[in-house]
Image (cartoon, rainbow, N blue to C red; front, side, top):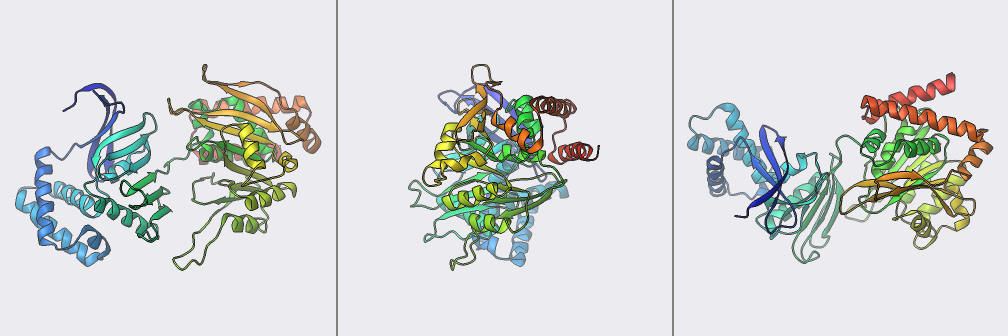
Length: 481
């Protein structure tokens, strides 16, 4: 047994009536920390007996976990009755609450997702990954990054069983003829799976967990993802209907930032959001219509694409259009046409800095003419440092009339701070032309916004709906005095 050399973290997770202890530590000869689970209210001896009970059930109930999962309520009742009989056989003096705990534990192990359900309930995890049955399950922790767990899936057949259960819940199919699965669950969790031999080492399963409480702008300020000055500048752009693109690398926080700054939309405007998988949660004070794409059915019919929804949204009289991610030329063309006809558009894009953002937009496959880029007023670039796992706003930039980028704020890694490097020019010019705001008015408005954001941070108002109510009152007073 390897020796622990450093304890990094510990906490508890509750799964039904089961209390699970989570320990994160570094062991000798290991370069990646271990994420260790142990069930506190089930002793080692009890777990051994439970394994014996599971083995007996296999002989008494001639049904596989997959068959049981598909078999309906009557078959499940027989299964649960048999489990209760065996538990009373081995634990004759068991009390009802402990009996229920053990029954639920066996059901989870036999027809549920097993110990994966513990990982799904851990709010500190962002990603749960099975690479094959020969490796332990991996997780991505919000604080500690990638970790190996002490959870192992015994066979490729069991991984396939988990994938089938998840696909069924999502209303999707995955077969050897169609060995890829991309779906979202009712919980909001996103799931990707691949079957052997497409993934040559074995079946894979990736669960990207949906955050129970969406990131708010206060979360981002308090975690130093953005400073108050940067947040106020983004607020100014969004309030004054300046179209904005949020770019960044994979898992850099683009969608989370888009969700956070959506708090800045005025409540008296109609907002339509378009996503492949529903991730946004806007304040309940807003006039918001969320829309999702749909994959074709097994016969290849019924597909609803991003382009379909963008075109349709323009017939819904939106004031603002939010798009999950720009990927294709036709989508971009319609979006930029929407900008030029007076709609404010907010979208995400995969690009690592503002220059790469412009390059991605103006080259294949998106291929927007550079002359049209001035329809976008602001670009916010997100960055995730893979070494420290920190997410930060890397750059805030304005787009000039020629379609070039001018950086206004730049993140400095050495000092872990976002600095102002240039004062806005085109944004000031646009606000003067269309809002009659002089530079002094804009500066005064920014200071006022910084004050409100600081008040929200000081009071710890983090819920997007609570922030929405505060900002709705702010807009009401601005309109009605």
